[in-house]
Image 1 (cartoon, one colour):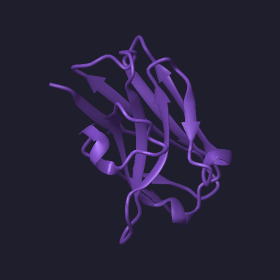
Image 2 (tube, helix red, strand yellow):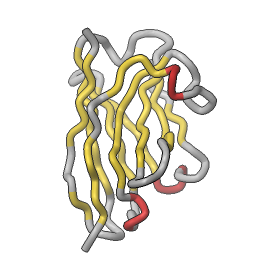
Image 3 (spheres, one colour):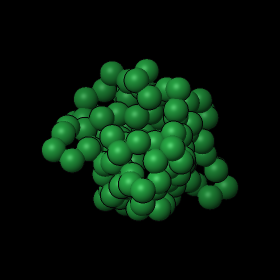
Image 4 (cartoon, one colour):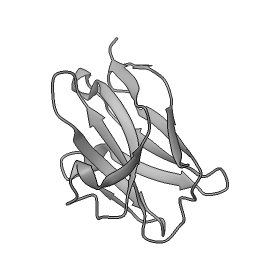
Length: 125
């Protein structure tokens, strides 16, 4: 059974960096052909794909967030992490980590087979 669990601060001040970690169990993040994504859902809006790190370690980001986003991994801990810099209240959302075998930059939500439960992050002073 594959499980993903997000963790990190629930409150971040404007202009600071949001940092979240996704801990994966039941599967290795280095297993061939899987992509590990971060996705968010602002209040009252739809899901927004943020970026991914692939099984080989390469990362790719949504063009709209690329300048502020970094995704990295710790293979020893089987974790991958999101950093989003210079946050504003518009970055307030539920943040999810999820897995897919399709290129997340073009995949639909239905392509994801496992999701974390999501973690609320609020940007406020």
